[in-house]
Length: 613
Image (cartoon, rainbow, N blue to C red; front, side, top):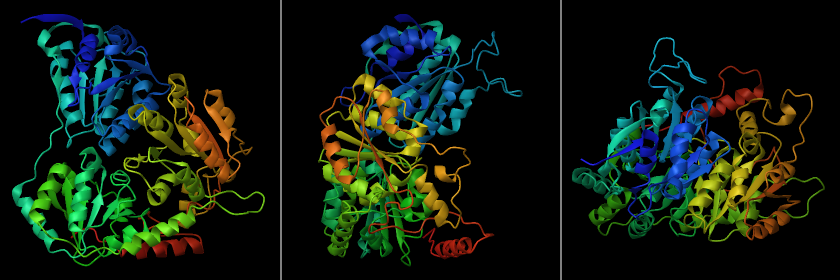
């Protein structure tokens, strides 16, 4: 057997550089790295040595560079991914939030944090967490509950089994999610004689598992008896590349489609059977067809509480839930009839079984009436008194009017995700939302990742001032790499979204808007100056019309543009033709009349929940 003598770090990056997807591209495109004493001497040397065969990019913060990698994988429909490496200690634990985000959203990313010395000679090393009762524990054990696969590389030959296991998870549509390979820092530098054929190119196919024929027959029979079925389109439709098949299935069988955050834009809003978003942040049209649905057909969805109105939306007596999902865990939730398999394959086989079946035609005026209300709700304001601040809905309307078929609206947390899900009229593929974890601080890093993945698309990043303050440093990375995207920064001087939820639950305004915080001086943050100091083209829009003009002008730039606009903190986007109850627990004991009223509304909502079939 011919062998090659390499350090473990050199072997890792060499092996990763020859793992290909079905399109002949490296599946792990390259590595984001912030070096420290836990990875600079081993992985740092290996990454420098391999050069462009496995490129390295520097981020500003471990969490946000991981967010960039996650957004890249999401935008590439999980067909490519990226690696993220950090030093031991705080560099590693900074990535745990990002790992949780990837885990919830079923997105592939390879985390390679530095770890303690496997030989334990210099223990405790700088930044080492010592468990008083377990000598095998390090800070990296925090990754275990938020990784689909976790391994600790404590000998160079561990890579021979750990790396193929990692790739299996990253490319498996059912198990897909983050992988953590905690890499002991002394082992990174140790040499080993690796088999030469270990470094042969390998193509990893994303499998398309077929459904059980008995389950398929049962589900077809269930749908055939339905008069008013509805399809809930989740992110699995996009990752399966089943968009066209879903459109054909819905059209042939005359079944309306409603969207989740992850599934939005699988079909363009213009499709006749796309009734928009469902649930808490859903459209009046979508929620109407959901409320009277006798069979709910989930395709690639986790049935998150926002989609289901905390299971009070699908309230027709006797209704059944079908869950088409590649992951049995998701397929069998809430008493659903699980149909386990690849979304594209299942829909093709299911339409064959259904033959000429067609449901009762949905009322098209439900959709047209709702869109009329959306357009009116998002219209530019007329003449207003001095000092008027636009609503988030009016900001969305401005960006929508300035957008094109190539535009992608993206966001993650705060007011805008729900508002965009309800109000944004997406082109196909024109929506990128991180709402499984709803992680503040994802937005700017995510915009960078989405633009890297789809350089021919225009990325329009919505971010509130609160999220911007949490994580803005990858804006500098985008400037340095000349990656252009447009940021619409809505400044409502605090956490306006959660402030409104606080009031809606009967509480007092407290600790959310700056004016309600325990501070000596109210901050006046100059976001234009801040973004400009990192090299972005930064400017402030004076009103809605000015915002539209500035968005169009940003398309000609080769660096990020940040457009700041002041918005009304007290009046959110409004319902605009939608909305539904959400289970947010309200205190049983309250000191105020409005608190008692909120509790009464909450109990009324609980009475509508229909949790199982």
